[in-house]
Image (tube, rainbow, N blue to C red):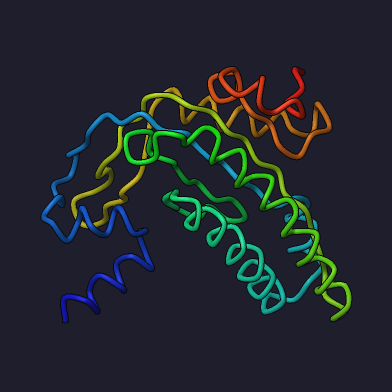
Length: 198
């Protein structure tokens, strides 16, 4: 039964949040400050697609693309925190994954390459395709339980999360699918010449 509870809570709130909740971290407002790379992902053109495709096709499409994004994040040691419509918020905890800056960038490149393969398959099957935008930023965040008395969310908040969301909003303005802040990129510029200053 304990294993089933772990599997169910992990499916709904993520592996790390599940572990914390099942260990008794269930008080509203309980949180801790952690340092993390914040990953904010969004599907491109989703509003237009959702207005033209039937609901079942939209759900199937979201599941296809989110399955890929979740797999890439989790395989690289990140924690998916929540889905917001066509967006996804995840973190790479710098205490748990000391090389998280490099790993998050490599995961972003992996996701871009995997999207190409998925889109080729979807096109071959006559299904709608899309791309994504992604922002990476690093900083301290408050990680914990936030919400009402009867409904809590285990998530991150703080200026670094807000900055990550604003960076994501800049993707179209600078015509880039992936934007990485200097808080992530600076220490990696020598080993990643493809990181170009905007």
